[in-house]
Image (tube, rainbow, N blue to C red; front, side, top):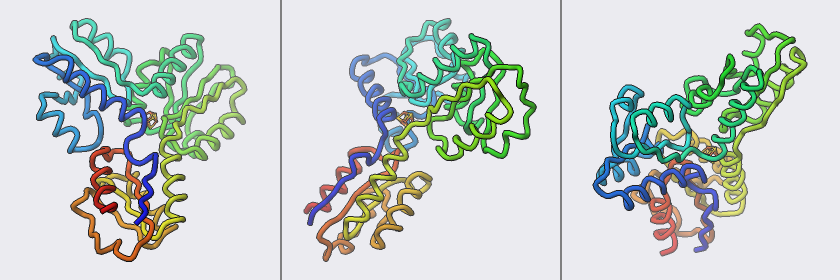
Amino acid sequence: MEVVLAKTAGFCFGVSRAVEQVYEQLEKNQGVPIYTFGPIVHNEEVVEDLKSKGVQVINTEEELAAVEEGIVIIRAHGVAKRIYDLLERNGVTVVDATCPFVKKIHKKVQESSRAGREIIIAGNPVHPEVQGIIGWCETPVTVIEQPEDVERYQWDPNKEYCLVAQTTYHYQKFINIIEILKKVLYNIICENTICNATHERQAEAAQIASTVDAMIVIGGRNSSNTQKLYEICRGKCKDTYYIQTVDGLDTGWLTSMKKVGITAGASTPRNIIQEVVTVCQR
Ligand code: SF4
């Protein structure tokens, strides 16, 4: 049986880079307390493995303020500037695993607000990434969740604005927001800061699913991006199976199949994907 594994299966570039940095710190700094501010990835197995090796997860700013030694790793979502300031004041070593695509947004909003522009963010206001971006703005910020929300706000056509997007924001909705804003604001810079990782993973999954006899989608039961991947693949290949780990794989599904495709959601670690590939290739 031929097995086609999606190149984009599993962690995106930013998340795998962040997870690697935690393991790297563990190796280099034995005996030093190591913390991550928030879980490094939404995957219990990885977080548990790191915990068993001594990495502690800090969940609130209050808890963070109490840390006075060791290493704090900032995850891919990034954090507000005040968090770096706090850690510096406390003399804690910072390992910054903020995804470079998110870092670019921090720089953009900081520069734009320093130039006097007010910031508009298209995204989910309670998402940690958006909270982090807000924390780099030095002028008033408005977060818009949906294009229809634009009209709820009072915009001042005499002011200058800069619009950015949460990296996982929906592309078409972002375009709609730009169109609506440009009708009321004359001086607005629109920066498309959406990351293509999710889109690329979905496009590749659809392409593979349309050329195989069966498709396997690996990911957590509650992972919304894995569910979405499953729906996309199911639309292209009726023999699509959703499993969490290799234990969920029934090789009976694949007996008469000549070609099987495999993809995985954004929080599925490489080893879990590899185990499924190995079983399929037997
Ligand atoms: Fe991953 Fe893109 Fe987010 Fe970076 S910006 S962490 S590559 S989804």
